[in-house]
Length: 463
Ligand code: ADP
Image 1 (cartoon, helix red, strand yellow):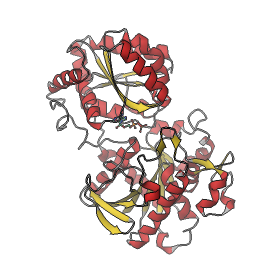
Image 2 (cartoon, rainbow, N blue to C red):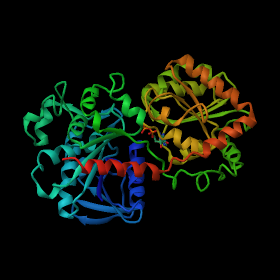
Image 3 (spheres, rainbow, N blue to C red):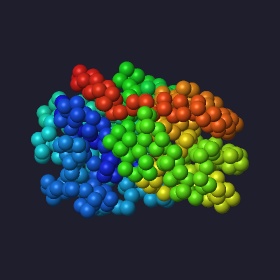
Image 4 (cartoon, helix red, strand yellow):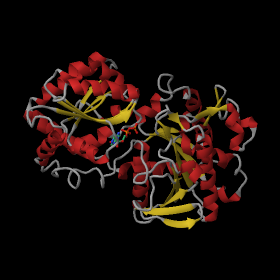
């Protein structure tokens, strides 16, 4: 099958979240399974010739190869993409995001003709690439080149929809009749994700539980009705993790490698992390790790309320993340008062993330909602026991046998579950068993890629 992957961020080129991990790893697994895959993404400022081996195809198109021979095409446009960030500044989204991603989708479809790549499947991710599907079913609907092309939309987080003022609609170059409740209109605004959901042949999201949740009012962010209408075409496939990057047996960043069979290195990784955090070097104290966007979605409203109490417990707590200023301020205040308990790293730092996954005992991820979540999967792989709220992909991957889970979203339950985890850590024999079991899970991409291939086949049967 010829597959075009459309994603606005792809590992190793640009990443702000889990979408990039998926868009980078799924193509590799598909290629392994014998598929012909290419990727198209914008060329941001961070994609430099120094960092990557980049070849030029055209004036405005360059590419780099990942896997054995997966060409990642970069759509270039300095005015739109040569900026410090992908989607916006601290103060808010770039005001011309509709122009930027409309351009990306338009140029990507043109490129398919120029390189004569007739995709069987265009696999789009999130609102940024939804216009590719909208254009395919409007501007290109009669174009023989795309006659056999079918589409699939993966929703990584329905909370981000690509909403724009109505007066920007004409820039899309499609008829005003599509600015209608049945199509892209959403409370008098343009909603690009909704456009994708209407036009995609198949819709999926990144865990079976989240696929169900987003069809409800509580989790659907206003789009539950659109999904309900398409119920038969909505699926959930868990993300895998890239084992060439996230593998404690081969990880070059961590202090010592380890595995379920040879777990001793984990203690060395813990000591290394304690040194880095300037914590007392104690084996008997549980070290809690957290790596996340600092956003309410990730459970920070609860963490903020419990923080003082957490710090009074006999534990160590390392946090890595960036996000909402209010949480930056709150955490900076806490670390001043509890420097031996809390180590705070307000930045995006891949290397440090590896060290935290490897060196922590418990991984805290009490997200209010979580489409799939990669953090808990990586943590399990590194024998770091996840503590999560029962929602979305967390509910699909963590249970009482491999972690700690609470099912009422409030600060009391979170605190109680942390206390339970700390207590369990005290029983070192039982804990070692838990760690071993966690590390034996298989969340490789192979299985997920096979499921995606199943969805592609299903899409191909659509008229
Ligand atoms: P989301 O995509 O909603 O942010 P996921 O759990 O699906 O959440 O994926 C987040 C990914 O980004 C994980 O791989 C996590 O390790 C990584 N990550 C998040 N914040 C940071 C950070 N500050 N530094 C390094 N890696 C981070």
